[in-house]
Amino acid sequence: RTDPRGNDYYWIGGDRPTGVPHEGTDVGAIFAGYASVTPLELDLTAFHAMPLLEEWGWSLEEVDSEGRQLAQLNGGPKLPIVESVTA
Image (cartoon, rainbow, N blue to C red; front, side, top):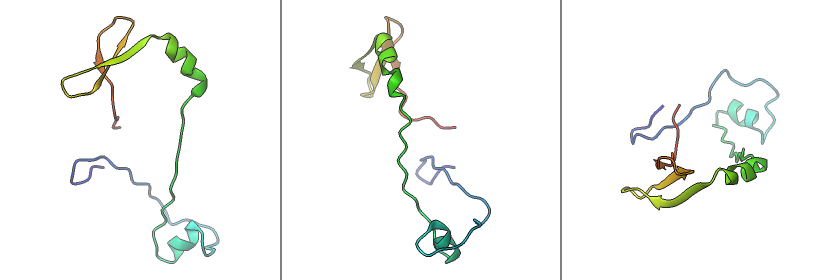
């Protein structure tokens, strides 16, 4: 979905959760008529692959006319770094 400002956002929905609505839990909040917001922090970086990426020889020293860093691999074309991907 896209908000009125043109920013993409994602909405997770579905059937009402099942389970025991204990006070202080997400299920308890939903059954009490509240929204349940769970802050998550996901870091899926494959740190074990970093040495391989260093071997590729990327250069990130130049910027384009819009101030975006340009990536260049082993003398190939200079491409702007993608900041976000929309599905």
